[in-house]
Length: 178
Image (cartoon, rainbow, N blue to C red):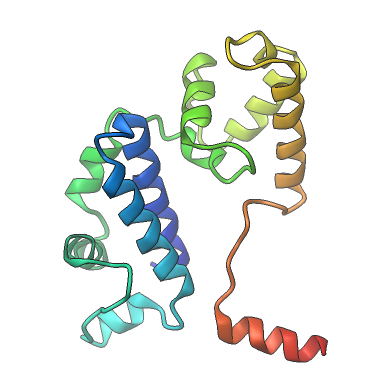
């Protein structure tokens, strides 16, 4: 797995914690977010370090998450993550890539409209929004519906949530531009 894939998984775990009980799991949500940031900003692929048998030490990854990371790299899955993700619809996670959609809103939309297919959930949500069904939900409205349509449009244009760039690549790109 690449750092980016692991970071996405960590963000999904944080989102699942948010859905399960945001106040109870506040520290876990923060910890997994920081760990995802650390992985995205790492200059080396964690998988390569693991294959070489080097110890994985990153600021932002403590012993508990480090143990989960090691289990993930060894086996490809983590029992703890399975527990955290249980009961959370998998179709919610692709929606988290869309700007302005956080875990709670994505979860609610998936549950309200019984969206079950991760592969088509963005298309399905867009269709539902164009039909005016989101505006009818309590806590949403026409403005929210239009914002979701705009966010989906931006997502399709590649303007997803802000992607981070590793400093050496950013520096090289800046040098080229200058």
